[in-house]
Amino acid sequence: EDDAGLPPFLYSTGDNIGVMPVNRAEMVEQVADHLGFDLEDTFVLRPPAGGDASTFSPKVPTPCTVAEYLSLYAELTLPPRRDVMRVLATFAEDTSEREELYQMSKKKNYDKFRESISKEHLGLADIITNYYPSIQISLADFIQICTPLQPRWYSASSSSLASPHALSLTFDVITIPRALDGSFCLGACSHHMANLLVGESCRIMKLGTSGFVLPLSPKTPLLMVANGTGVAPMRALCQERFYQKKMGL
Image (cartoon, rainbow, N blue to C red; front, side, top):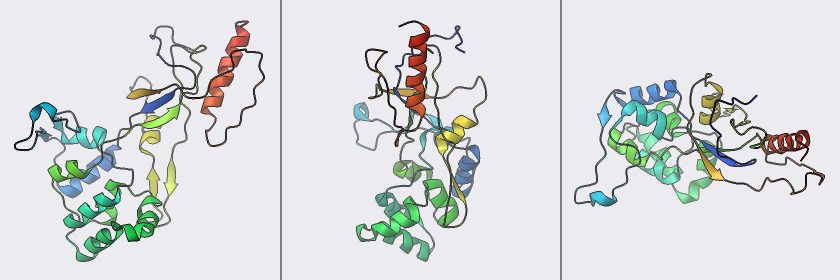
């Protein structure tokens, strides 16, 4: 049921909705502990010496605490690029780890990178704390190489006509086993949303209207094939059709 006390959320049926994940607290603490970061420390990002302050666009709001940065702005769970692996190699204190990281950064060894990193879903946090633990990197260098946290995209699974005051998202809680050692990759966004309590907020954004739209005439029959799309947009379209029928449209 809609909560009539809430303002209408400006979305259309089938819209693409971006949700900003929050990195798990235990992961944030593990990274900070391993690298010697104090989560309560505050830092300020400034343009490089001689740089133009008017064009300086920092990756994160500044000032910012280390806890806020690692939780809200650092991409810790997605596999890093090969060029980042090359940089990480320079911070590995163990010779064998340094060489392995360096070799995986080479174009000719892409298959090794794909099998060991991409297919195993090893994010930056996993690489530093569990698999190449000799890596020691300063906060400044970490911020420099770490990709900004990206939104995860979902199709709205509710009808904006039937449910103008509430947006529904339908998703799997991602838990992927790793062949490497039996550990698990936990989806940053799906686990974040699954653990939200009633009344807690979530950062979202709208990409725009997708191609999931109903025919102009509600009498036009539909055949829905959720091949690769999941059931979310189909649920939204069905909800809209039922609403149209209920309202005699």
